[in-house]
Length: 457
Image (cartoon, rainbow, N blue to C red; front, side, top):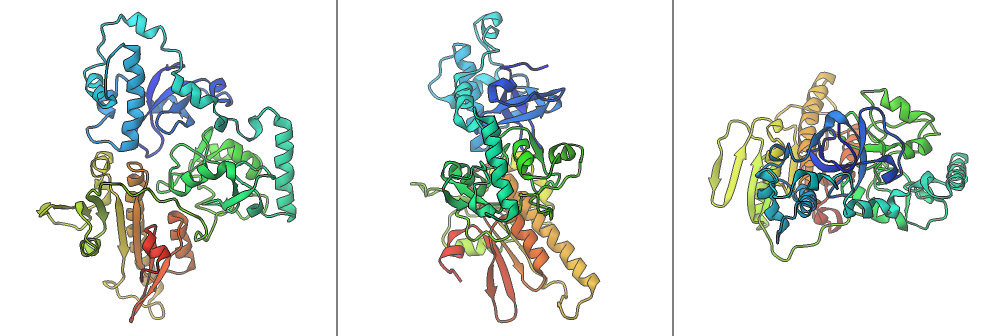
């Protein structure tokens, strides 16, 4: 069984295997874990989470298998953090952390006796200790004035229930009533104070690996059962903002759908999904000095035509068009595949998409809202759902490889009623742009700035 200080690979749902170190509950100010579970500190993003033993592997023994040839930048940086620590313990000299990958793949060879290396293995590295000592792990009821904080937060939420104040008037990330609200929470109804603004922006950009989507911190997390959601919620937020005993009930429910996927109508549940996202600011990545070719995953070749007209340099463009062989046109490599599931972790790590494009049109299916039958509509909605979740699958996996991914999803407007529109907005967290054509109208969801801010159409 792993012990404190052991380096491991950890696995959560559909996320890739990630490097971590075993820590004690006292190290991170958390409660004792259940049997056969451990607290881990994730390298790279420096969060903590509770992981079951069957989802943990020894870092050294499984390095070659888990460290594939082409990995995303975030995962590479996380692995380098571990390799630097191990190299220093083994007295290995290096000039560039990237050079340590070859040393690791050769079995972490060292001239030092094993007893010398293992003597300090239970000690946590300084990078871990410094992160754990930071204020971000002193949460809500875990501060020095625990009883005062609990009373203050409870009174604040009671005022919300009575209607004296609204959720938008308080910061739902820390539930402190006196913080100055500087923005709206990106996913749920409520405000965000200045102290929590940085964490809120990470949530808005989809950087929610191993953290609660309400407060932006780690801890005892529960995950939504929907494979295309991947949102997690911590015990502290559920204890304060959800119904009584929600956390324990969720643990017993293998098919639990989170507060973002299914709305809880109970007025005592303060976790309420935001329906309109136009007021939520999104911080775009800085423009690099050197422009590089972009990698694209798309549902068809329509986006390729537009990107070429806009004079984008395309390095890789992969679609899902069936029964077409891989071919190369100039510098643009195009590979078509039959099913979206064909894109595995290795392929996403290799392609590292910058842009995801998806679309659905009913022109090939005879459909008119006023004359079509219920069966026709159901057929169209089933096809729409398949296209949308294929797009969402790619977007979620692309976000594991890069800190920011641009996307566009385009659909016929005739098919989309209020319920379908709400469901799409729920997953993409952006409002649609309505495009009116002579014979029909379209809805477009995107985080590409020109569409949203410069009235591109």
